[in-house]
Image (cartoon, rainbow, N blue to C red; front, side, top):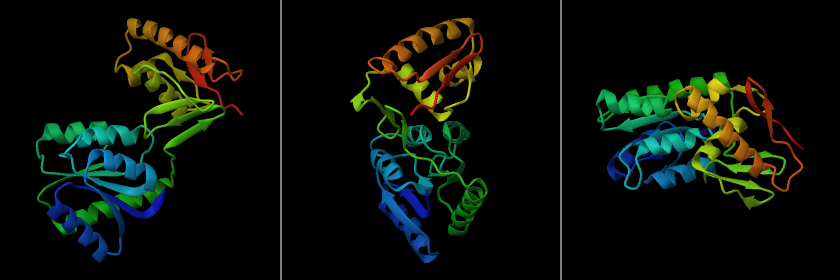
Length: 229
């Protein structure tokens, strides 16, 4: 993580200039993006300490940007948006945003929110990578792709979600209930039955041509991704 860098995602040039001028005046380093795709790319490339994110982007909604970044990183995301309804705030916060500022905003408030995020960074001291490597397995979270021995895996959306969830918790046993809540948002018996099917197909794809055992089943409990050489 580049602890001195802030990513500003804003397509309105006047607002972007206001934010970057404020940052420059207060000795913050920054990079900018004016689209959702640009934001995701910049987050993966520069690994900034904080993201200041507008929701109304020209290509994809800012909430989608939050979801994408959250698939590989817990970097603080502060939404700076003209959407002031509680429903919009809840949607962004539930997606993983850390804070929400409504436009128009004061420079003093923006700087205060940044300082709060910096304190959180200093306390956590966490650094994460947008690329996960475990033996022959590579997951590029930013691109949303997984590779085995350098070959891209053909995964369904559910299989990819399961793979990422296990990778984020490598070496840890995840219960059936925990996994189904994270992937499906519920833990009905049908969800657990579906989980077994998806895990079986995922395991088959992971172990196709590989002697490495990536997924270990704990009967009656759940699954764990093994750390392999």
